[in-house]
Every structure is written in structure tokens, then in C-alpha cells.
Length: 300
Image 1 (cartoon, rainbow, N blue to C red):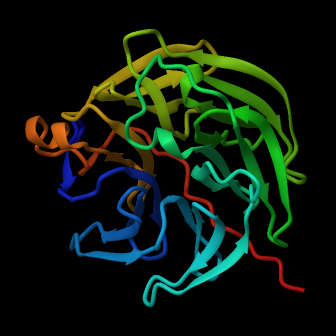
Image 2 (image 1 turned 60 degrees about the vertical axis):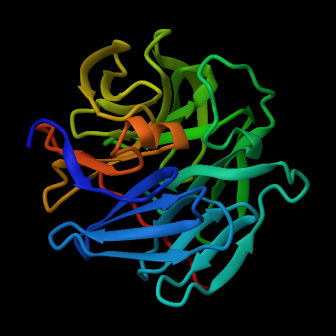
């Protein structure tokens, strides 16, 4: 399976935020516009879902096997069986035109998530200009929240190096990946620099993951592919074609974290010409990747 294949045909509209559940052999993902969180057993491919009641940009599992998610109105705990929601905090209560987009947990169990203008949902076009009104936030296990990056347009892919010294980040319209020095203990980031520039005509960078060799796997919206980049040289080392245009996000999973799962999106026109748009694809790239970190709650 070293070429992409269809893992699961779904009715997902805007599939994003995949994470791997290493305890239960499951892949999770969100449907932003469908307002759903999904999980699928990778052996039986049995699917479970829960309605979030509003757009859901990202999710993670906690150390206690709970779900934490970024919705339109803030961060919530969500019960996968009942759908019950417990609100934690809204990072942008005074910016109702924004919603939470992509995010994940860092190696120390903090939940990072950024915001995006709601009007950009699913109809974002590469090379159009938008006002940067979003930000990237970090919530620690005691539920304290901190704004880490301002003037963001579409907060998207985020990843941490295997040595926990670097954080990589994508604001989609910039068409680049920025790197920061990252402090594992405090969560502080500093010394921003650009490590990857996506050339014109390739699509726009969306979700991102990292492998054990330090290479970045970047999904390209309207690019029909997922790509592998060397952040030390800024060069693309691999391009893997996917049979749909809106390739959204990816994560490593499987027992040995050697399978790359890829979520996609669809529109009405896509579904006519791209039968598998919105489905999940997977392949074995010949290298293992980073685990999906869990949120660590700090009880008093």
C-alpha cells in the first residue's frame, strides 16, 4: 500500500483534523460543515459519529479518553456517546465572525487551535486576499489560554519536531510554513522563520503532520496531492497524488504509526466529477510518523 487507496468512502463535506487513537485502533476526524465528529475502527471500518451542534474545526483525545474539541463558540468537552457538551472557554468572545479551525495537542498535552473567518468555509480560493483577523491560541491543562500568534487569516497545520525543539505552523493564504523555537516545558515560541514556500500553481497548504525523519507532510487544498518537504532545505522531496482536488489534512496511524491517513473535502461540483471527494484515503509512505498527543488535564 505504498500508493494511496480509498480507506473509507464517506459523506463528509469538509473533512479535517484527523487524529489517531493509539489505545483503540481508531482514526478520528471532524466534518466542519457537517457539524460532526467521526471515528472509524481501521480493521472493521465500523464508523461512529456524534453531532456537535455547531461547526467543529478540530479535536483531540484526553488522557482520560474524553474528547476536547474546538467549535464555533469555543473549546468544549464532548461525550462521544451522548453528544453532551461541556464548555471550557471561548478564546474570541468579541470576534463572532471567526470560528475555531485546525488544532491539536502538543507533546506536553496542551491544546493548540487557531481561528479563521467563518465566511471562508469550503469556498476558500487559492490566491485570493483576505483580512487577517484570526489568531493561534494555546490552552494548558488548567484551562488557562494564551494567544500565541496574531494577524492570522486561516489558521491551519501545526506540528512539532521529534526532539520537541521546533514548532511548525501554517497560515494557509501565506502559502508557507513557519518554524518557531519551541519550549516543551513552558510552551513558549520565539524566533519565527520561514522554512517552506509553496510555489504558485500547487494549491494552498492546509493540514500538516511530521514523520520520524523530521520531514513535513503537507496537504495541498486544490492541489490534488499530499506532499513531503524537508524543512532544513525548503525542498519538496515527494508528491503523492490524490484523486480529489481538496486535500485537507493528514495524520499517521496504525500500530507502528506507518500509515498516513488523509481527509478530503467536497462541494456540489466536486461530487459530480470527483466521486470520492470528502472520503478518507491512506497509504504506507515507508516511514513512521508522530503520535497524536493527548490533552493532559491538571486536576486541583
